[in-house]
Image (cartoon, rainbow, N blue to C red; front, top):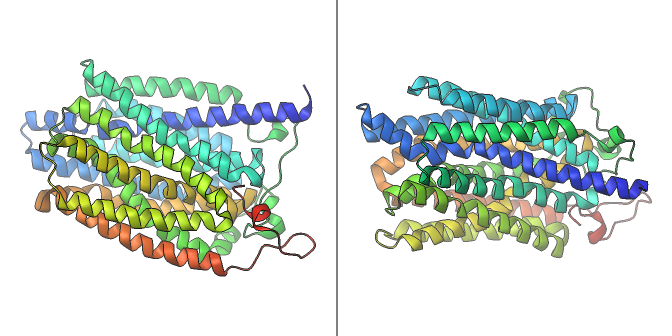
Length: 448
């Protein structure tokens, strides 16, 4: 086999391993959302008030999201300094262990500690993937590759929820669902440990070039930084980086709220059974996956400004649909409620996937793409902390209409940040080639 064909073979194999592996993370993440109605029933059977049980589980979700945010801030730097593969495997293996331990708990304190640990250690998985992608693929394919890799947390989430819904339909209790999920991810960990490599250099193949648009200039092609501080300083000086963080704050709050509470809304407000709610909740990430693919094509079509335009349009339309959800009453017509929730997923997830994916690689290159991704995600998940307890309290006081009204406000505020980001992109100086001449737009963008 020729070297170019061998490189292409292992690039495809790497994408498959990453997509399957990170999809597995969601068996050990969406399981709490799917199982929440059953856990509420279990706590209620022990004498805990259902409203109090919902608030306690909301607090667990918030603690888990906080752990994920804390982990993200450190994870990107660790990955850039120590390598992507080993950290990716640590995240996956830790998720398996914590998922098994969760089933052994029966009280809120134990659930809280284990779920916090689960999300904390999982936080290192995505930056690990970013580092691997930055070294296996040319910057001219960052957008396309990250679009495919992003399907891991969208279709993976959808498949995980649908699969766990089938298990619940078959009479398996929530602890059994957790054990089955952990066992499957354990098998994916083994496959990744055997076949996944850090770089083409580990298979005696050439490593593709990085993006010329990164914030580190010629140093952006060096995948081995020696210190974390200079990476942070470079990002701190970039206005574009800060605007991406603001966008991540709003979009992650929206995404995490829906990830956590869709099945509960479907059961309580739409009248679906718990198994039906689990399966219907899979439509949100499923159509989010379609959104990622379409958003990638639109970004390619409109050039370097495409992603910023898609983010602005997506957030404005998302706020509009959330307003419709807030104004309506969907008791007796559950299909309408499910459709509107699915539309929100379609409008939100495509723009969201840009942030800690292709945009992070644009900003950080091989040198600090994982750091950029970790910081952007970390800021975002600080917003996501409010998806748990705050959502439970708003819902308890104002109902689901109040929740959707608050989320609509978040979407519209985020669209303002998207407008500023688009203006910055439009006013940015052109990228220069090695001769000091402006590069054509179709050559300079990293998602071509």
